[in-house]
Image 1 (tube, rainbow, N blue to C red):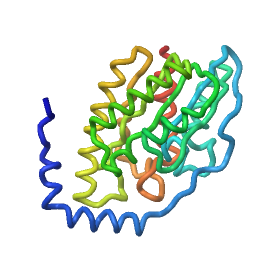
Image 2 (cartoon, rainbow, N blue to C red; image 1 turned 180 degrees about the vertical axis):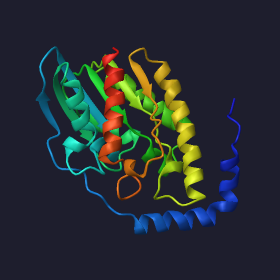
Image 3 (tube, rainbow, N blue to C red; image 1 turned 180 degrees about the horizontal axis):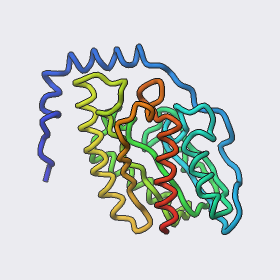
Image 4 (tube, rainbow, N blue to C red; image 1 turned 135 degrees about the horizontal axis):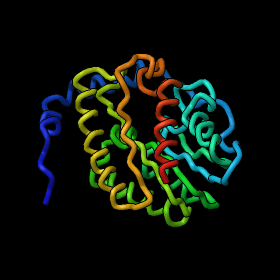
Length: 236
């Protein structure tokens, strides 16, 4: 049975000229932040061995931070290294969708104990449907928990795009509603895998949590995200 059409999906047609103009303006005026410098793999800490994989899009890659130490990977590894000998690897790139990540990880050798993923924004902006998104996320989780041997996966919620400072209304509302739909599908997929936990990020309305481009997290946001992800991983 097909899902009912939401209000924002109905209004996209009459709003299309406005949405198209806003999308072009956002792309034209967006501040292009680079992926941060620093290592993308390494070993840190003492204790039981923990092989960690971080995968996803520009937020997983740390855009918005100056160095990887100030990004998700740096904060997450530092937090886990208090309890484990962490052998970590970052496989992420700006613009990556779920399908791009499946393709990238398909070439990856080795096995891991834990993984954190961050995906969804580029699926939203490329108009990937909820059905396709959930099917691709299921394939990604199959690969992680199968070939790559991951015993605990934390899937980060699709960001609340209606809260991105860089997006004007009504574009922010439309993208935010679609992001919420994809995240609902992501939660359902995560629930189907006993090794997977969905991580909702309920961050406060604090301007300091946004990077200068109004689109990516700041180092402060990355730290809060990493702490929440580490807590979920440690519960395993």
